[in-house]
Figure 1: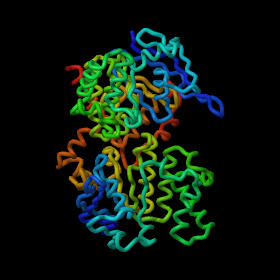
Figure 2: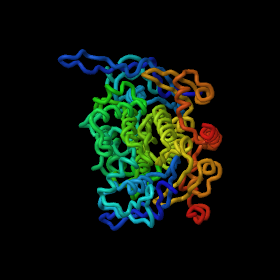
Figure 3: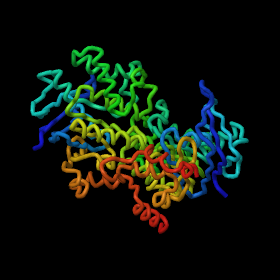
Length: 283
Length: 276
């Protein structure tokens, strides 16, 4: 059975000018030990659909789905208190801006231990021990010293490692990484991606990688979902997506990669998207 | 016969930081002696990670920041803004486009005023003429007349970057410094902006200094490539040389770290995963 199973997810936002549909009938599933990448441009609803799963959307959002189950539990029927027990424990998320997603007022040690205290009910000494173990796992040198560092004393890459440590603190079954490397340099990006994939393999987590970078998809994913304007354009395993993309949008996206340039101009998505029959794109 | 538009000789930039009551002053060597030349109509790409001094170098070339030592020539004339100040003519010749189009446009200024302002400050053209030129420039960068009276928040990231490019081009510069112009943009929009830059380069014979950390973009747009690491140019050569045969170990690290989106590398990764 799938770890996370979503059927026909719709997310609408109430705005001053009527309701806006950010996610329009997306279905997806993730199995244990699987890396699913969700690719799309800004505004494609890729983050919003995952925030809906986590229950982190503001009150202006209306979430409806035919089914939204995680690990056999129906997420739609959970009370907020019950959901808080799952979110951060069995299912956790890493965000794009590591500097912005850590609290600047508390040490990283406090922020890691907070999760352990809340979800695992651990005592002070074992909490500290576990926090050191986690920092070691995510590859931070001098973990004991680092526990008392504040986020501003660390680099972006290190902050992202701390975020990962917090996310995996309770051995989650599903880890959602929302553009985990977009704010980082390529060399650091490589390290973080390697870390995520190795942790995923080690603990047999399901991993959802939200990204707009085709390179990141190619380097990490088992299966890929391509989203555009809130709709799912294509779903395929990674090799066949790159070898023989089915939807026009995916083809357009791949040919807009600078490394695939032929001649001295790049084909753009709008050039290709609406030329051939759009019925292909809707499939 | 190629004309050198910009030439830097052994450019150094030090920043002095700290120096409080209990702490000694410290000197940060942001750029440690970098030399380069760019010919007319060509593109020099400067690559490196954050903190390597590439943006400092961009500020020096754009004549925003003076170099601590070293010589900078623009169109063959030596420029030193620390001593001689900056003439309007020099300001006209070099323009910059910044990374973040959300931060580089004044939210309370209409696009028409954004584009007219360089002319207002640097020339004595009358308002009607400024307006005409701004309209023409909007067309050039793929926007329309109807955008003239709109505010920056009404535009998408890609459109804003077009506006920033248009503003930089208003004074007919010979050199355009592009500081990560596409890293904040989506893939498809990135392609459009890169195409626009290529079109404009052909039309006006522009010279670009293109700063980026994305090697795939650099490979596509650059004629020459300089790789910077901790303030030094560790690698400098034509694009094909650098990409075919990187000499410095840092350049090789950089190439190895860049994610590859081709079928062959996916196959090797999947095979490795299966074996593990």
